Length: 213
Image (cartoon, rainbow, N blue to C red; front, side, top):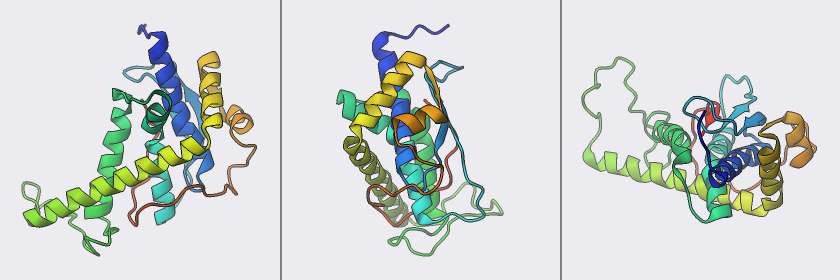
């Protein structure tokens, strides 16, 4: 029963189309199988991924996933030259991922092969590193997120026609599926996708969950 203005609906459509477009263009991002701009709970739009079952995940796979998660905000920036609060869940997820990448998984060259994860919970109330290290971690997290955000902008700018077509389809139908994505974006199978854009950094992130904006 939420009242959504026409401008808000358009913003949501392009936000979700941004996620969908990047996920279907990047080689390792899990493709979206359903996208909706129908409000559900606190969410104004949502997308469902088809994740792969993996025991381990490579740097390239993780960075593609991060880029896809930032695709919604990037689409808003490209189409409206302004951003909204709709990316809250995306930013929360990516920020947690980035800190895990840098401080837990040892996937950052500047921090090195170190993990500050405490499986015993003994450092719950204190940070097991110095203030200088904390500052370095914060800097690397910021660089990681901004690199993948700029990458998302580059990918969507290069494929703006696909972004617009998908958003228009969402505005018309409100819910679209894998078949619509294949017809609008690229007639591709779920595998064999070509990589687009540079990786941008040497760090990794855990696999994202379904996006709700």
